[in-house]
Length: 374
Image: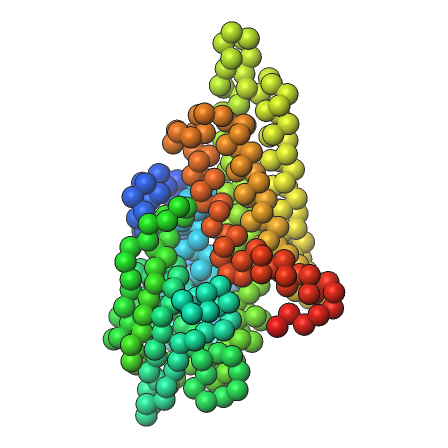
């Protein structure tokens, strides 16, 4: 098991690598390969795999700490890592022993392939199909957004069930599977290095044994396994972005000067007001994240409500905090040197990642009113 003291030092080393490459990753939209290699060499890609298969034996709280720390230096690295940990959660729960061992060593980068052009942000309702063909399954799909699409080694792939009742089934699809193609390069507003691209499958054959869980159980796995990990880790990424923006804004305010007044920006009450709001909103989001982790770990009755709330809260906080960073830093914020404009762009991604913030508000409202979510 990776001990917490060891984990902290490993994360610090990876964060340094991520920070060194963050500007280039953002400017060119390149995959953060050096940071991901550093994560692998430090054993952090296997952080959440069980010790019995050679993994770090840590859980969701430790993974959230890694993602938050990475997001403060390179949000693209944080996003790739977040999706990997979500994939590992499914692998640990449903993949065969040999696959779990490979993932635990850090030799395999995983991701989720859920979102589709036809069902858009309703990732729980795939339109792609799986058809039995002897001892194989043939996949047909138009996936719209797959993080690490051209870089991952393993895809947790959703489709309609083969024959069972239910909304979906899940499959383990290795990179290089015949009939699976990756679309054009990602050129986005923020998180520009996360290699999020469309993927298609045309009679892509995987063995029938590639099924993850029983046929038709995909929805239950998505909601029971993937959703808590995705929501919490997405929240951690937003908080890491907000934390970085607070630090950069305070640093800029402390050194930028009104020479004619012999004052810094921090000497101006209006700027201190903005920075105070940034600090409070970041701390509020972090407090909800920590409470959500406690609710999950202790199986509290409100755990699912917290899971629904935490991403909506953190994504809205990150947007508000980075808005304030742009205001407080003034014209300098629009230049690359201060760094808050990258945080501003990166923060926008979470609100449109499924389940979107608008969808989460609907789910939360249903939960509070005692209505079924689906």
